Figure 1: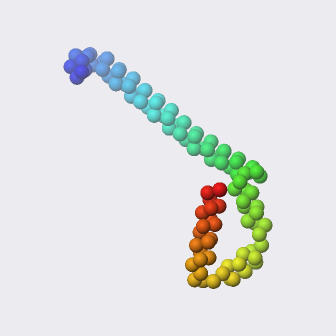
Figure 2: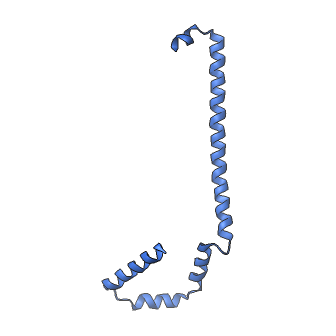
Amino acid sequence: MLGLLYNMPREELIAQLYDGLVLLVLGMGTVFVFLVLLIYITKIMSKLCMRDPNHPANAKAKTEAAAPAATAARTVAAAPVNDDAAVAAAIAAAYDKSRN
């Protein structure tokens, strides 16, 4: 294979190397532009989805905002500090909620 390069005229070799370099830059540039566009389009779609009032994350935020902070403070204050059964029950409830 290298013998073909040695036997090729210098001008033709330089022209082929130049063409290869142009193809390399065009190909890598195309991929780079596509990936940058993909990143920005994904960010825009994410913002559009978060504006949707029916999106699960927005519905969850609305219900959490509706709960009064005083009720949450009383619940935390009423819980015993070293109650392992309550901690285990809370972990089991969180795990069950994440599975459903």
